[in-house]
Amino acid sequence: MKLQRKSGLRALTVGAVAISGALVLTACGSDNNGGSNSSSSTPSGSSSSGIKCDGKGQLLASGSSAQQNAMDAWVQAYQAACTGTTINYKASSSGEGVIDFNQGTDSFAGSDSPLKPAEATSSKKVCAGGTGIDIPMVGGPIAIGYNLSGVNNLVLDASTIAKIFNSKITKWNDPAIKALNPTATLPSTKIQAFHRQDESGTTDNLTKYLGTAAKADWPYPHAKAFAGKGGQSAAKSAGVAAQVKQTPGAIGYFELSYATASSITTAKIATGASSPAEATSANASAGIASAKVVGTGSDLSLDLSSTYTTKAANAYPIVLVTYEIACDKGNKASTLPLLKSFLTYTASEAGQAKLSTAGYAPLPTEIATKVRSTVTSLS
Image 1 (cartoon, rainbow, N blue to C red):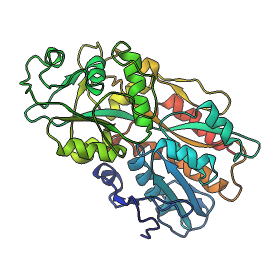
Image 2: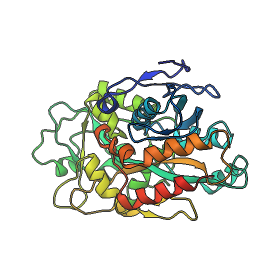
Image 3: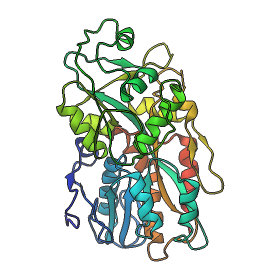
């Protein structure tokens, strides 16, 4: 495998290895985008894997690290089927991905939050005659991971999570935590709360949940930049997970795939249902199923507010959806066939089927059908 990026290089985590059985690497760069890439050489057309190949050359993309493991698995499968192609995804952050896309660097961006109105307006400069749109592609739970010896079935709710990340609850044996875990032996250990230091869609989605389900305890507007008081920061989901893994008494938030890869214990969430919901792919899909499409035209941005307050059995409420951002019209002619071919695969049943094994949640059928239609219409 040819490596084009040197900085930020890291191996594909265990969650994705379980899917792909091979190592895909990611890093950082600009025009020489590095990241998840490899190249092959067969003609366009349908491959033996069922992937419809079209276009050739290199496709540059960047953004959300939340979908890193899913993208690695997709890239490997696509490139194995479609020779003469290189899909180069740089896992940075949702904010950086949108910037790269709106500067014309990338053919698509990954973002865990839909485009803001100003960002959509800016995209018109690079989408000739069109605009950037949000295409949901990856769903999944945001896990609340913790490191507390002897406590394996921790239950938290929106209020306690909000207070922990806003430094209102600072000890593990706080009465609020004890009330949710009456049979657990909770130590007086100081809570070491870790949050993202970079602007992140993961933070944005967590704080949307807190601001909806625990309004009284989370007084800040949702945002990609963490606004809570106190705590410690780390770069990207991988950095937060690493800090939780190595720090006794730690707690943090990241996509389930990072918890799975690092064997980090995750909290169950009390929602008002008969039993707390565990962070699993199936439970996240059950939560996302209540989402509503609120975008207009080809835009498929989702409203997840009903998910955050769900009391449905086995519906995990802290979820995110990663969007692939592309132009509805005015995509670069040189890369449009490859862009559509790759996104057609990721949205397909085969592509979505890869997600559960890596700790993600496949899109609900109704949303996936709309996504496939939108990808077909890109021009």
